[in-house]
Image (spheres, rainbow, N blue to C red):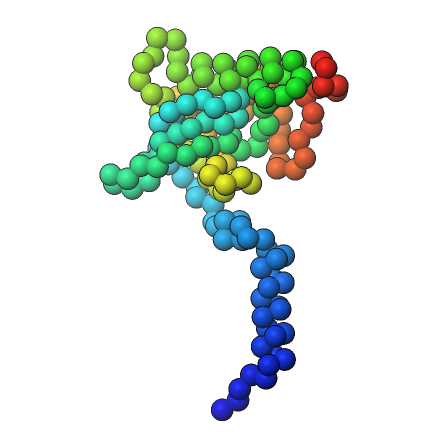
Length: 164
């Protein structure tokens, strides 16, 4: 029977540590396969122009509440230092709310989640979100000029100077 020499064990442990460092501590999250969907959900809150809180039905009698970022877009931030960006953020949020819950509607808005995957930040997923009427919410925000196409890289600024 062959046994490992202490140097070989150190080398193997070092290699495993290097793989873990390169992959990052969130490696299992990044490696997760996307879920094609559709997954039925109910919107519990419109957080901002590109994020919803939903209660998704994941199995018989099983529901999960989570935040969902609309995939492929970036909307202005409400907490920006720039007044113009804050105003655009309010418009994007109102636009999204109106598409989800038409005037006078009291029932929570039903949506379908497609192409679901883990987001960059813990506790939030990315998904293409479709309203009950079949409207792709991300595309609607883009068409209205209230969002920009976004691939996960560095965000383009909404204001040239923070004082705008």
